[in-house]
Image 1: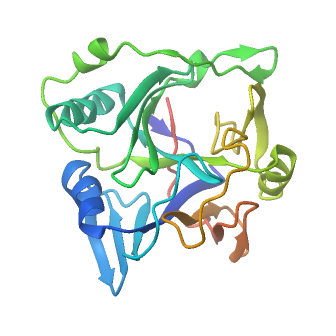
Image 2 (image 1 turned 90 degrees about the vertical axis):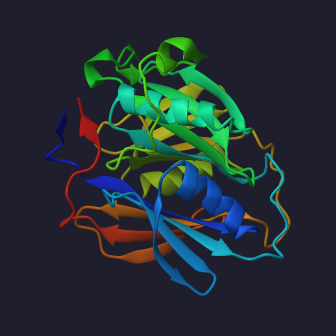
Length: 269
């Protein structure tokens, strides 16, 4: 596997407001394998040994739990380097009898496991297929949703293990109020529409990736109570970009940083 020398964009951070910090640490640290790299006041930063992204948990014990689905995070997705790595973390979840597993899909471009963390935040664990195998309809990407053979996946992992050290924050998928408004916001950051014919959803990316950002209408405009748990913000590294902080259409803070000195992250297989 080689890495792209021309990558211009990467997701490098995510912040969640959490109600029960110890329960969330039991999931992200003890089960998935992220390490606490900084703890100051209510803020805990976690990362994998490869330091490809940072997950920040902001502890607010009085925060109401965000109802699902509501505008904001649908899921964030962690991209594992290989199918064997995906199989190994899946076996770890199975052996732990993790109760919030939600399903699995073959999207043509990727194979994905879906679960929720203990407070209901959606999480996708996935591996990409080689780009020459991605399905297209004409010149447009044609992602699909088919059943994933979980027994076959599990058979690839004799032993379980936590997330592989070089796992990245592959994409974010957001519940939005208006697809056109959200698409315009992300196009303003340099992303391009990759697929727009998926029912109720669109997918945007840079560098020819299948998607860095997904947007959908599936929450039907429902909103969470003020101060609820869930997504507060995320960080995007963009090559030759002036650092700034924006607010996305859902109210999340988007920190833009210059990626020029960063190593390339997304694998090209």
